[in-house]
Length: 478
Image (cartoon, rainbow, N blue to C red; front, side, top):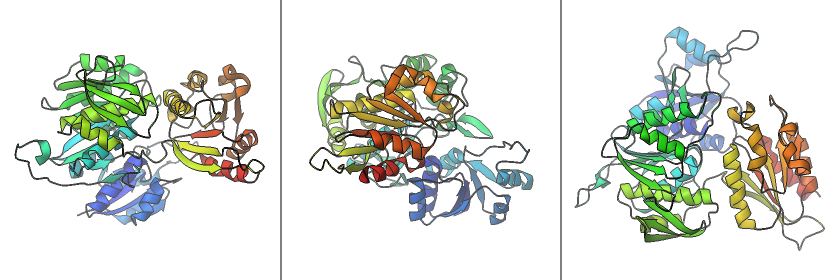
């Protein structure tokens, strides 16, 4: 057992790693700045000691290993001071350090059948779906998800460390671990994508488009990283690929040494017929299962096909997977209903519903909105969002925002802290779009224009300043 001190512990990946290390019996401490749920809640529940900030005095903790998250850098302030003094102290002292993905690979994933889910969108949800399918099949998988699957209540667990082989000697004699495989870089000292450390036997390539403009110059650079992942899959492994994605076809065309199963298109190995909430699953053109569940959106239909195809590789039939998906409860902050509020003066009318969702890339915003539109029909949708990711802050995709919001009735953007003018970017939306420079003003705008029966969809990859609760409080006071 060892003592690890995690820098950037409140990120979804590093927080999950902390949970796994604690479950394995290691002593875990960590530091971060600006924490927010759900990861902060999970860490507190685990009894993990957190230190605010990255002060050099933490060197005195003297852990066996400092595990460094990719939010930590060697950047400097305008005054020339280190933004992360602790990392400078670690380097000066020659103290032991490693990255989160490297520590995970060496201490958790070695010797396990890893099922990795990669893609620009849907990684978290698909990883949660696949984990739940394997759980319902009795395979007791370990997992690390970039969110909190509601079926489990935690973002990570070790799972079974060994399963007895069945009479046929199938893959059930290998312990399974399902992991969300992020293409973002590993650490300030390792600029490879995180997922190259995981060495999966089953790899899902869900989709691929340009993102992370802060570290990738173009789509070709990301495709190169995805091909690095493909190179790590053994010949006996399986690559599950979205048949709609030309970018992924280019990745595989560069070289592939494993079995490939496609999903999505009518001619794919796994396809769907029917609406996203109730559809038949076709395998090689033959109907093999039916998924009937509470999830909405074409994107979730595709996520389900990807999970079914990956689970089939480890012996779970499509019909059993479909039965598991019928009981899938989604992931926290994925179309999570935060409040239903009856407006005063209209007690008999439909309540206003407030949702929380992680969407932040324009494509993810569009698919999330489309899923809600399919669910609520002609009811009004008020989209509340902030361009918070590094890519969005750079303004790389600002021109796509009106396209991503086509199906909403009103859009409210938090425009503070951007290097570009959100009002100008949303001009094509006319009077349907409004911008506020702070969260309180944004909440007031939304609450003032909400009507009975409205659906208020809040989208951000951060805490969004508690905007959901602020809107709810204002509505209750109307």
